[in-house]
Length: 187
Ligand SMILES: [Zn+2]
Image 1 (cartoon, helix red, strand yellow):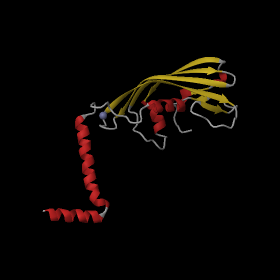
Image 2 (cartoon, rainbow, N blue to C red):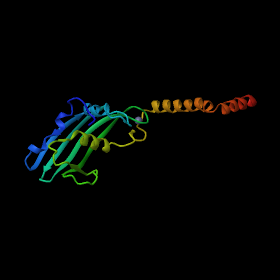
Image 3 (cartoon, rainbow, N blue to C red):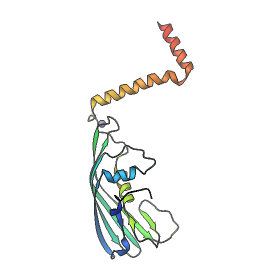
Image 4 (cartoon, helix red, strand yellow):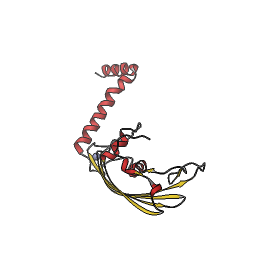
C-alpha cells in the first residue's frame, strides 16, 4: 500500500507458519515509524509527530478461521502544541482489538473485524498499529489550560489580529474606500 523502505518490514507477520494458539510480538516505536507513513500519506491533516517512544505489544491468537489481535501500547509522543507551538508531551496508554476473519464474505470491514482472503498468508501490522496509535491521540493537541508558553500565545494572538486588520480592507475594495472615507470624516 502506501509505504516505502524497509523500516516497516518487521511488522509483516507470516501467520501461515504459526501454530494455532497465542503468539506475542513486541515493537519499539520511534518517530521514524510515523515518518514512514507521513511521507506517503497524501492528506496529512495534523502536525507531524516530532518524537516518539512507544512500546507496542501484539498478542496474536491464531484459530482455524480467524486471528484475534490484541494491541496494547504505552509510551509517549512529542508534538507541537496547537495553541502555543511549544513542545507538548502526550502520554499513550491504551489497547485495541482487531479480529481478522478468513473468507470472502461480502460484508464490509468494520473497525473491529477485517476480512482476509483465504489466500492470505501474511499480515502487515504496521498500518493497524499506526491507525491505533493515531486514533488514540487527541484531535486537539494543546497544553492543559495555563501551561502554554504565555509569550508565544500573546505573540500569536497579536499576529492574528494584525492579519485580520490587514486583510479586511483588501477583501472588498468598496469597503476599503468606505473605511478610508470614514477615517477622513472622523479626523
Ligand atoms: Zn501550548
